[in-house]
Amino acid sequence: MKLGNFLIFFLTISLVLSLYLASTDNLIFDLEFYKNYSNVDGADDIHKSLLGFFRDENEVPGVFNSKEKSHLEDVKEVIRNFKRFFVFLSLFNITLLSLLLFYSKEKLSKLLISSGVLSLVLPVPFIMFNFYNLFIKFHLIFFPQGNWRFPIDSTIISLFPRQFFYDATLNIILNSMMFGVIFLLIGVFLSRRSGD
Image (cartoon, rainbow, N blue to C red):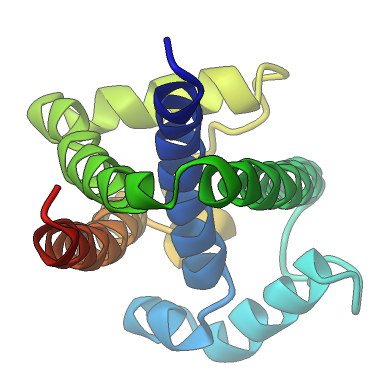
């Protein structure tokens, strides 16, 4: 595999992962999104306080019981790990992109096209599967300690019903796909302009 193609292969995967992680982080800290799920008294304040907790600004809101607090501590750690991984990917992207531009500037259009296509294709298998099964698998992977199941009348379920996670996932996918389309269009434009 030539160096340019090697760089494109790894950069495509890394850029798309970065795109989805950035969309996830943006949604997690978008207070406006949570306002669609404010069926509990004082939900807006609880959501705001919870996001503050995820940012290390305050403790877990007192409205949650000990089991819910334990799970939210785990959620916070997962968010931290996602952020660390995003920083790593960003440095990785900058390094490989610099190499790509140094050795083969004309490959940039191919990178953008492949990244755009992958970002559009990646969610297809997830859309085809039952969301609830994917939701369970996600929790089994990221919360193996098993403290993520709660009664339907619990505070945490009242604040974050299943529909919340479905809508959040859809939002992340659509946002990432939108940027994927932008990558694709720019890549096609650059390719036609350079005559690739």
